[in-house]
Amino acid sequence: MALVWPFIIALGVIIAILTNIVFFMWAEFKIAGRVVDRYGPMETGRFHGWLQSVADVIKFLGKEDIIPANVDRLIFKIAPFVGFVPVVMITMAIPYTAKLIVRDLDIGVFYIVALSSFTFISMIMGGWASGNRFGFLGAFRAAGQLLAYELPLGLSIAGVVMLSSTLRLMGIVEDQTVWNFAIQPIGFLVFLVAMQVELQRSPFDLAVAESELVAGYAVEYSGMRFALFQVGEFFGLWGLSSLFVILFLGGWHGPFLPDIVWFFIKFYAVFLFLAFSRVSVPRVRPDQLMALGWKVMLPAALLNILITAAMIILVPHYKIPLALTEFAIVIAALFLMRRAVK
Amino acid sequence: MTGQTIAFYLIAAILVFGALYIVTSKNIMRAVFMHLFAMVMIAGIYVLLSAEFLAAMQILVYAGAVTTMIVFSLMLAGNQDSPTGGVSLDNKKKLPALLVSGGLFLTVVFMIAGQKWPSVEKAAGLAAPSVAAIGRIIFSRYVLPFEVIGFLLLAALIGVIVVAGREE
Amino acid sequence: MVSLQHYLVLSTILFAIGAYGIMVRRNAILILISIELMLNAVNINMVAFARFVTPETLAGQVFTIFAIASGAAEVGIGLAIILLVYRGRATVNVDEIDLLKW
Image (cartoon, each protein chain N blue to C red):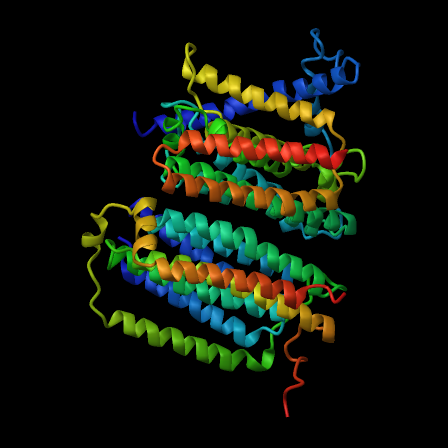
């Protein structure tokens, strides 16, 4: 039974994700609508169009599979899977509660960071194999954007790893008596921004800007292949949001309710934040994005590591001084930004 | 026929096939992606050798960064007329190259076959190394090479920016 | 059972294929890829030795970490030089970059 249990959990995770896609996509449409004072989907399904995303999936399944003439067929077909499979592997490595884990890897966080580098490989493959100059350019812009934010992502994770002295995800959660975002607010903010860029979500989705470029690197993909890119993006959303909950929001810890309920409360809170930020802020220009990444996020992440390392080595009980120092820096930065905007 | 043996032969076969494809294909795009594929297979071999940290590092560095660098340079410096084809082998050098690499291979294989290697049973019973062990070794015995690698990467970074930066 | 010799032979095969690729290919970027193949073959060798011969000290794995890092740095510089040559001569075919020949 001990040998079969990981497979059962893995299957459960995949089923949970697939059922959650329906809910999440519907919630995003409704939120996007309500924020601008319209209703969102109302027709399909009696209650506020809750079957809208199911209808979308059926639409995708029914489309004709068009492969343009001058593409490299093998790479064109493989590209969505190169992006999809590693993302599923990421969602498998995450502990949802103390018992619901497929396997607690010794290199947990590092495994996830390594696999998340496959998303832009699949973009490049799809864009290059499409034989379409605009898809090509879109792919490289997206790859440059994702590459620029891999570093702050990894470095903010390094700050958390330093606090818990272990790469194992369960070790990081067990170590959080105080949630990590209170101890490392700089890392928290950097990871939040980097996560949104990695997931290609607004306000940072210029590579797949739905209302401007047609679909960026996926411009020649139609039907199920395009849907595979989208589903891969959703699995990535799930994986990175769960990672965020585990690293910075204390995983499954919480006072009265059972562990799994707390995990999903925090997870849905993160998702709500992402959905709201998508509709609240205008899209960021590419050069602004790269400037933000290299000039603000990377130094902030490095500063985070520096302060954390200094505090851990020099001060015996390092948690409170670390928290105070980092909060002071965040407030000072916000203050300076207000002065600059005036 | 344990699972490890099957995995090793499978990965090795795919790896050798991928390497042969890289050195003989006429399609540069497929050669580059076969290189990516070969790097991922090598990460698989590291996992078979209980070096999980190295496998993740291999994927992060090679599959993530090096392949992207190669693809970017192909975009900038590749054959603009036929971005998917256009590379060939130097036919005059095929036979001498085959002789040289074949000779190299046979020499090393004969050296390997003539040696006494530690038996498998001794190694199979030992515990798999943990990341903490690698960390301890790097920061106690090999801390100097670690710092030097940091400088090397910094020098490489500055060198790339200076060499390939814009001429304005 | 997969023994040390299997890994050594595999790494030798990859090394020989990489050497063949360097000698036969004309595109500079493909030569760089073949060099990477040789580097990785050597890395497999070292990790195999670390696993079978010295599992306590893990020297092979640490060395491989440094080899991966310096290999990546070398690829970066190599590509930068190739780009510079391309800007000057509009080709990456190593047979045509022969100004230093007498």
